[in-house]
Length: 115
Image 1: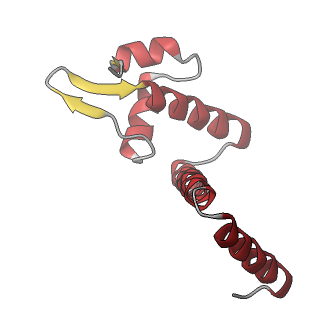
Image 2: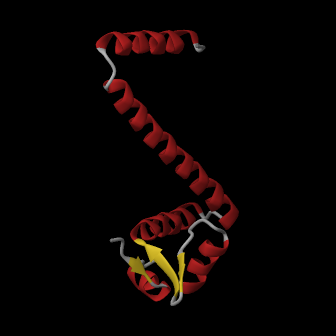
């Protein structure tokens, strides 16, 4: 079962985070906590995301709209990586001749830049 943390717990865990900054990140929709009868609840993944947000905003002094764009790009990259892993696993289950044709086609695309 996934553990969830309250706003108070999150602020206590993450040194660079204060309640105002947390509310700003939530308002900018760069982190989306679970809504519970007790209030907002943050997952461990949210904590990692919040730490990254704090680091990005501290090191690069990024405003919330830029943070939202950066996080969107990171999310897209992570999705693409997951899709690529799934595709690699699917191709690995194919017979040798199919994998060979796929690799030949991939090499052709790399050389010519088109399929």
